[in-house]
Length: 69
Image 1 (tube, helix red, strand yellow):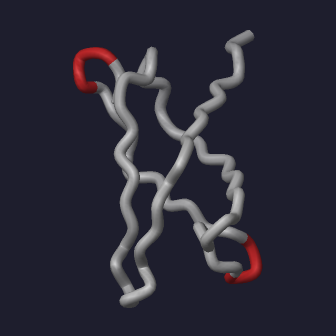
Image 2: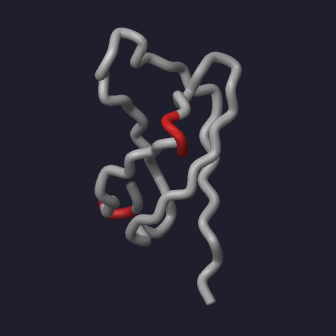
Image 3: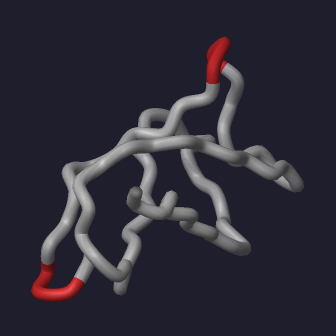
């Protein structure tokens, strides 16, 4: 979410080949594209709760935005 509450649509993160995401001790990297919301002020993380194992803890989140030009 950016200034003035501008936001993208929900972005789903999936790994190729059906690999499970966010396993204990793992490091995941994704590329996603959405609308430019300006300076990022807030990120909401969640999961679909599809199975009892659908829980995970996130230690760190980094967002890289390529420069325009």
